Picture 1: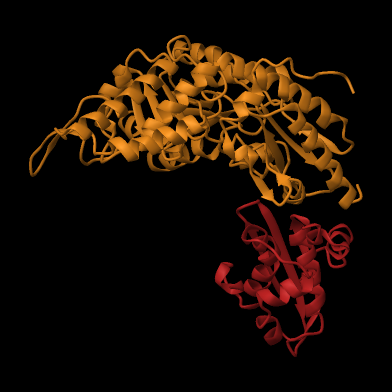
Picture 2: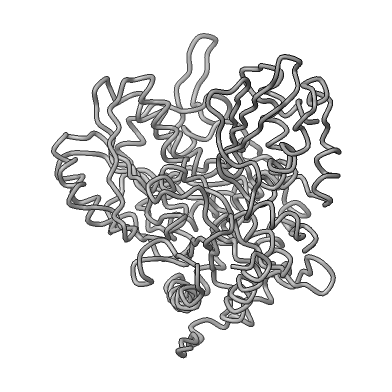
Length: 131
Length: 416
């Protein structure tokens, strides 16, 4: 169970590489997890070819949600928006390297949900985006 | 460490034998340390067996049946109502209305009394420490009726600002709705004073007793309450049943809430005549087994004594607060032990409440993390979330020690 808090997660929670905001940005989206009140905003800068060049996240949340946001943003740098649309729940879990119960899964997937809602240009983030 | 070990007001070791779940190992070798009774309490065998016995031996629908089982079920259901009436010293059992829970009881008042009595511009006073269940029904009614909602502020210490309350009473409010005990801060509010002042300006008072009725004696006549709402499942009874107590003149005058069977005296194709109290507000087949379980829970609590339970919790919370405050980085919210019940909500610097709760769970320590259905109160203290440990009659000092040890383990993992 302590695997949940393996070094990588604690480290990314305490020393995130991509915390901040980008103004102006090309894509921005924010959403909350109503279970815990966590809020997350993701900003992206994308070049003419649709490649993600700069990333940032802000808000507050638990170690799982913050570390997942930081790792997810790192993974999309230099990738196309089409590739971002294809990221799945399993990719996130593989990145975190942990197994999660249904409650904490929401924490881990909040960043992907926000990212996809932004990339798809949706008005609202929906759980279906990450299922 | 100062010695603050409780002086055994209750025979907790014996009480614990009534709660088989407290022996549960949540994973191999890890016994549960249940510190989440504010969310829902555990249930003693006396309650579980009363419900089991009802289904094995007596089950039938209540009221109109003429057969033996129906009469027996009806008698058991009404006996439960009588026990609850006696617990809160209601003048009559007819003033005890069964609902689904506290939330539904509050909604009953908002929909029935509120819609019949409140008009645009009327002032309703709530507090900053309310549970969402005593906020949202009023938001909904305020939008529909164009009401003005005002809030008694919470002081930095976690008490209601009664000076500000006196000022608000100058607005001639029609209703004051407040929690008797905060589910986050544990604050026990001075109900007698709040109600007395409200009545002086002619306002009606609704008390959210979800956290008070389970933990200390509450007397609706002594406190001169107009409405009191509470739930069975936080006081050793089953989920799915709660109570609205109301003053008789108010309940008689209010229109029915839900329509259907049991709440009528007569029905024709185009009209109905409502039944008398309490049935007027109990449409459809109620939670019969749950009412009987609730009655058994009341018997159980009264046999032990709510005064003794309150004293036991005071000792546990005093000890818990002292131990929590020793831990570097821990901040506990709410007033000192003399003003509160058995609830300790805290933050640990640098660690999110969800992570605290998750690591505590690995030691079997069950606490709650989040905003505890009181987002405005968390905003008031500039918090996103807190971790809440809460105590009841079956909790021990040793369990507080396990909580403390587990928090130290969180600090180790997060290197804080």
